[in-house]
Image: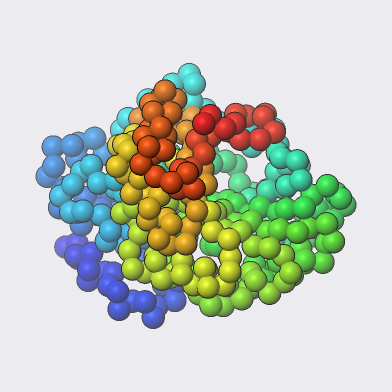
Length: 337
Ligand code: SF4
């Protein structure tokens, strides 16, 4: 028998450690459908039972989905569907050219002045549109790899280090604190940037100790959150983001424009308003990176431009994100509008 979501996850679990919250996940599509009262929905036949990129969703995130709604925008982001098996010429396993930008395993140099470390392959949640779902990660913690620090130290042009992944906040506080301290000894490094979905999908991760681990040096800290829909925010997410705001961390958000999730003006406007209420500036709205298996999320550029136009008509300029796409080999994100 499958327990109800609220017996598995409950607000009283706020005292739990983030590692406990991380273990409270659903990995079985049938269990997910059952929790959401969707087992007998006609569209349940479309589920991909054993996807190559496995299902993984924290219970706290499932609790924000609407029961009985197959089209729930949070469910759509994580639900494996048979359509993922279709092949398409324009979709590949490395759509943004990570391999060509590799300086060494787990260290990418794509953009002038910045290097990006793939801090881990792990994530709290598996998003079906993830452009790194096929990346051949090297199973080691690059934050303790002296060679990476040496490469950064030797390049006087690098002023910013980006931690991405996977999700860098899957690493423990000690690794993050030690790495930040080491980075701070390199004179040309001014900024540390983290790309993370954790504050949104597993807000328990945002602890005082984590914040201390990241903010104990002179480096400016920027956190780029990844939220795609206003329904992803609840009280726990808001309070995690408030902690980051109080620590004076710059908060920006990247979203991906996804068919069936946020491809309408109401959803995008509501997302921007919600981000701002939570101290985050809308930064980028990405066209989908054309990763194999994610074709069903793709939105044509013309429609994306029309959506941004409608946002402009309804929001102050600072709440309208830049519409961008990443083109493999280009030394910057291409701004469409
Ligand atoms: S790297 Fe980001 S987009 Fe990809 S699965 Fe992890 S959280 Fe989702």
